[in-house]
Length: 117
Image (cartoon, rainbow, N blue to C red; front, side, top):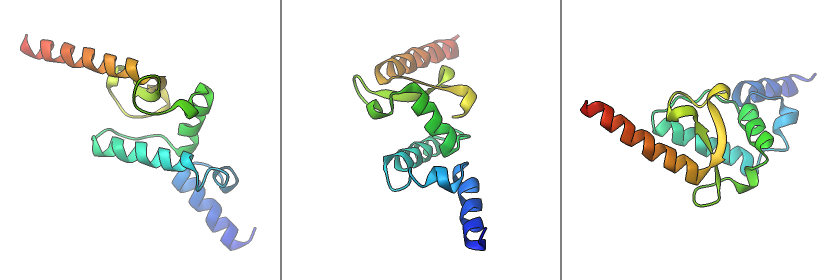
């Protein structure tokens, strides 16, 4: 392997958690963009992010809902179990945004009630 190819391969493994051959069809499209946006938003909210692009993409592919991803009624989101912990393979799942919002409101009320006790 030429040194430039090896450098590119190492970069893809380090940065995205996948080979350059796996990354190449995803680059320049919405997959890498949506991954970056979600990762950056989690960091802004102070939530640990432990997913590689490869893991994140597999979760969405397995759900079959990537084309329906987004905020609002009838859209799907990646949620954390109990709205706690990091975004990690073990702690995330795909669900309707409506359900995620409902669950978050319920958990907030529960936490506020517990704090008053």
